[in-house]
Length: 300
Image (cartoon, rainbow, N blue to C red):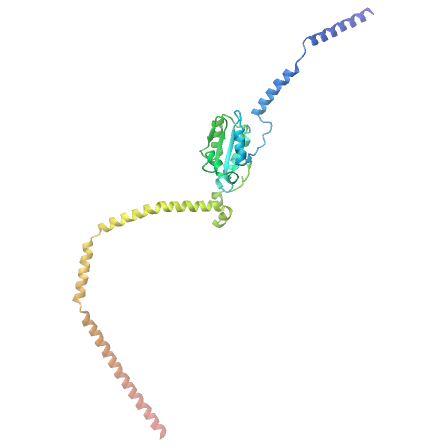
């Protein structure tokens, strides 16, 4: 009995000590939650929860101006100015979609040529299409290099200091119009000029314009060279020989009496005519005698 009482007494003392200790030092869960939220926000900023390709947002000129005005902090914004009818823009557009999935911490916008006024393009210094503009509060950089994916990634890294969270192969169709061909592939497939003109008339017109410009540039140079060559060739000719040949020709003409030759030819012609007339008369008389002989024999 005494042993049971002692065991219960020890248990009661232990429980009282535990409750008093827990009451004297309570755990502050609010501090832990705040630190965890900061850690989670920083982690999501560096590593987005989803690596699925996020396409750029299509905006017009007014929306672009509002987004530019509302931009605060060190957030970066990449803007693609393109034209849907331009083959070079169609080649850059899938690469820009890849960049939006490789750099999700950068906001990507796309402005089509027909969705904005010319004043919008001039305001941001866009004079050719396609063009990529990287913007934040202290940066306004326009890309001037090659339009391949590696060069664009290097531009992003140099302008922002950020690294891509993932790498997308350039052959993967991650954007719009990724399956469109170009002139080289069309020619390799044996596509005719008429089919290329139907698929992309602006490309054919641009090539024709380039050929005309080259002809306009080359023709004056070729004309001046031909004139210089002709002048040098004529200057080297010995014109005295032509004078001697003309004099010999005139002398030969004077030596030959053209009138005498003409008279001889006319006499020969008249003689031949008279001889033919005499022969005709002889034939006529012989035929008449033959016909008279036949009639007399018939009467007898």
